[in-house]
Every structure is written in structure tokens, then in C-alpha cells.
Length: 195
Image (cartoon, rainbow, N blue to C red; front, side):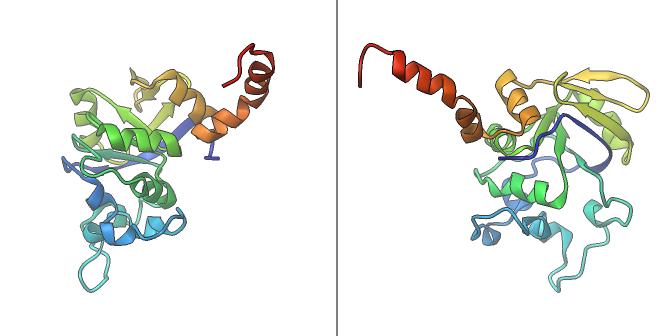
């Protein structure tokens, strides 16, 4: 079961880089675990840390004022590359609950939705404003599929109904099926044929 998400209100952390791939999000050498806990420490590892292990002072997630921010704004084509569920796990473990970009790679988007990370796709003008205003406080309303900017402007983003339902209820796909057990059992009892 994943954590339910209805609204996310947070200041943003901005990574303007385009084509951030899943190996940058979570390098392959950290994929040896089957649990989510602790992956936040490896998030963007090769960008966040120097070879000697010291934090890179120029990396946005290392800034002293980003603790507690839950919305990441990134350049176009976020999450491209290989499929790895560890990528949304690492973002979530770090505390990020949503990613905003003009394009989010399909496999990454699907893995995110299945794990409770909200992928928000916006138009180029909205992304440009967010990139130019790092730290802006915005609100994501999952039931309404909207992003509200500081001035009150509301932008609609695509989110299919099933994913929306699962996010709001805190259900992954298995959890959704389990929530339908009464209907499944009723159907099986009433059907005239057997497999």
C-alpha cells in the first residue's frame, strides 16, 4: 500500500537540466535492494556528491533551504532511459511527492503512478515560469488534476481516472484488486460457467 496523496502544497526545488535519465536519478549500482528505504540517500548520487563523497555545493538538492520541499521542477524529458522502479522510490524516500516537467518519460510516469509519485506535465510557458522562479510555493490538487501557481493561476494537467483514484486512496494495483474482492467473489459465485 502506498501513501495517499490528495493535495501537495510546497515550495519547489528546480533542476533545469533536460533529459534527466533514470541512471542519473538512481545509478545502477544502487539497484541491488528490493526495498525502498534508504534510496533517498542515493538519489542523484553522481550529481549530488563529488568523487570523495562531499556534497556538491552547486547541486540544487544540496542547498540548505530545500529541506522539506516536496515538488521537483525539471527540464524537458524527465525520467528517460531504462525502466527502474527504484527511480520513483528514491525520489519518494528523499521526500519528493511530485515532479513537474513539460515531458515525463512514459515508463517513468507509469512507475511513478504505481508508487505514489505524482507526475505533472505542463506547457512550456508554465515550466519556463517555474524554472525562472525557483522556490515558488505551488499547490497540486490530485482530484482536480490542477497545479496552482502563487498568483492563483490554475493549470490543468493530464491524469487518468484510475491513476487519480489510486493516488487519492493510497492504493497500488494490488491494493485496488484487493479492494474489489467482494465484487470478484460475487461474480465468481454467480457465473454459470467454470474455467
